Amino acid sequence: MEVLLGLLTIEPMSGYDLGQMIRESIHHFWNESYGQIYPNLKMLAAGGFVTRKTQKQKGKPDRNIYSITKKGRERLQRWLQVEPQPEFPRNELLLKLFFGATASPQTIGGYVDQMIAREQAVLERFAFIESEIAKNANYPDAPYWQIALRFGQIELEAHMRWAEETVTSLRKLDKERDRVSRSRKGKSHAGR
Amino acid sequence: MEVLLGLLTIEPMSGYDLGQMIRESIHHFWNESYGQIYPNLKMLAAGGFVTRKTQKQKGKPDRNIYSITKKGRERLQRWLQVEPQPEFPRNELLLKLFFGATASPQTIGGYVDQMIAREQAVLERFAFIESEIAKNANYPDAPYWQIALRFGQIELEAHMRWAEETVTSLRKLDKERDRVSRSRKGKSHAGR
DNA sequence: GGGTGCATGTAATGGGTTACATGATTCT
DNA sequence: AGAATCATGTAACCCATTACATGCACCC
Image (cartoon, rainbow over all chains, first blue to last red; front, side, top):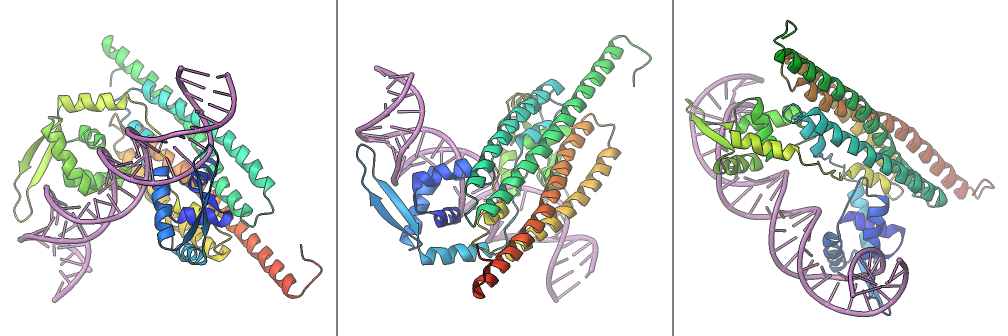
């Protein structure tokens, strides 16, 4: 709800534009689907927090351009003064890893590899966003955008370090398991 | 749903115990409320994935102890083979920071300070959990628990670094704003 | 000709939290 | 005396994603 108000302080936009902007620039810490954006804009308009102007287009559907009102800015202000509540994430990878002994080190290792690849791509995307912010250095919000982006960068770099560490740990566990099972088969002295 | 199955591989437990365990040991990457645990256990029992035994208690309500069945283990196995989907978090602090120019550096700075304090406490809690894992080093899952915990540690350390960096950035922004507004008031040459 | 992008919106569905209800015991 | 812990469960509610529906234009 308030994201929309916040983004509309940058410039008036349509619901579609807002969706674009969300997944292009703030996706790494916030997300909102169209199924939410459109109804929310409707509600905000009904409450007088935004106004709507329809732009006719040829060939394409009409664009509804929303602008934030004074009342909307006040609401945004109030919201900004409310202490943010930390949210507890659900990390399915970590959960599966937690039960890793039930699965196999290879399976889990594969998941970690995929995570590395995915986050590497995101890091590259971040570099692009950073250059975009640099282009808009004159905006008063730009330094804040940079700080928010920096969070993502630092966090992902940390994830990468963890992932590297983890693949080696998993390899070791794999070898150990191998050793143990082989020594069992051979009815060896090394058993534990 | 599958968390419950996973935790029940460690040992048979009641719904209450599961809730305890979730918020004591895997809270930093997974959460589940009682409003979900109890109905889910019911469904798992109905599907034959777990069995329930009632323990009578004096003074306290009966405990329903759930054990995972063979069928339940199979289900857990299948789930572990499914590639985990990354989830996009919602970080309210970052969102508010993103609109930081609309708020004030002090307000945002306060939020960052609170984050530092909160995460510092979590880091200490992690140290405790680590010692608990060390005590159960004989469990085959213990190394995996350690890896999952390590993720939290590395991530929080990264957050701390970001937060330190951010408070200094915000201070700078604050001074700058101060300078700009003062130079405007004095109709000075230094304006930009 | 078929997929993708623009552009809006609604409906169905699912997931999860909070609040409620109950009741004895134990700690402060 | 009152709060917290143990222990279970249901119901109300909120929020969010996904799917559906529409329709033109542009590109391959």
